[in-house]
Amino acid sequence: MSNSERFSTGIPKLDEMLGGGLIPGTLTVVMGATGIGKTQLGLQFANAGQQQEGERGILFDMTSRGDAQNHADYAKRMFDWTIKQRVLDLAFAADDVWNRDAIRTDYFHIFDRTGRRVTMKDLDHDQWQEWRAELNRKLDQAIAYFYGNFVHGARRVVIDGVEPVDRASDSFQFHLFDYIYHQILHKDHDWVARDLFRVHFRAHEATVAQHSYDHKKLATVLLYTSHEVRLDDLIDRPIESGDELSNANTIILMGKVREGNRMLRALHIPKHRGSAVDDRIVPFEITETGLVFE
Image (cartoon, rainbow, N blue to C red; front, side):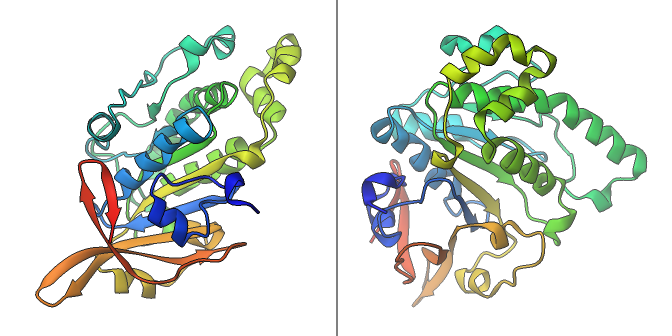
């Protein structure tokens, strides 16, 4: 695979470490503790789409406890990018999908309530049923968000806000991610359109065909917050069944390393299927323009 077919991360040194960039049609998991720089990396990747594909990537925020990430502030400061947010609970109108001005947005935060826990074991039966009902009401909006952006040229997806849990299999955020990845991001465009339009699909079938896209040419980056802060602990972390690390094509770990009497940020790539990879531990800094490697 030539470098021109890969997705640049927007960070030349990281592209070099990845043998040219991320491979189309695959999942990349970026894992590290809060504040280590995952969101900045994700925004650099999304922003790089402007130059490479002519369209920036899109951001999907699954934060359910506390405030959403500071994507808008970071994007404005790093790239002078004013993020356009999809309004939660905005009624979906079928014809809006074909109207770029109406549907093309950069950011969607699917959960807007604070204090919501992220594991199923924290919810009793009634709370779990309530959460499922709330999610089902919002899935149509999520499908419209992704599909509407893809038919207008977006090819990069950054999913942020996945919070740490003791067992990934207990996390309702991972259940949601599995649905989005397999039923939207990794599905033929016409079947996504069927899920979106439902009984009205036949009325839009010809337009759907005119706005086709290849899901194998999308790239997804999942930003996954860990309990572990030190890079060595992340490297030694076991992978359990149901953990997205086991399904990822590429894993990028970000954590703290000790150098003398200082703690530095560093990055390591333990997994990058189908490509040569630089497996060194490489220090980096966070600047006003994003991640900068030594």
